[in-house]
Image 1 (cartoon, rainbow, N blue to C red):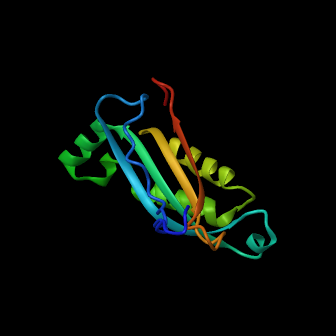
Image 2 (spheres, helix red, strand yellow; image 1 turned 60 degrees about the vertical axis):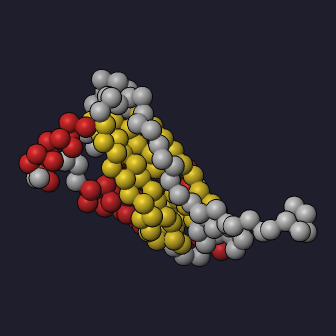
Length: 151
């Protein structure tokens, strides 16, 4: 960058606008969580291991659109995916275990999401905003689809 070039604005960790995955039907619904912030014991450096640090979690879940149609018609929580279960699972995983890597944390949350029967595909991203003073966040993103015809 030349001395006369403006300093670029820092990028913000935003989730991509993802298209429905191939493993879903043509009619899908995406349920998402943005910026779920949880204290987590994670990292390999001494300064990270001294105590919990903030981890921001983004989750995208793709479910068959029939779930939305059912819940929209009944307006009954029993007819949809319980957001509280997903949120609680992510919080519990992040706050009760010790992780060396974000990859392990991300994978554990991804599997918990995919264990929910209506979920056909999931994307989980984790970010540590406090690791590097010159970086907004450092993170990992994982994506997985259930096999067609899978549970």
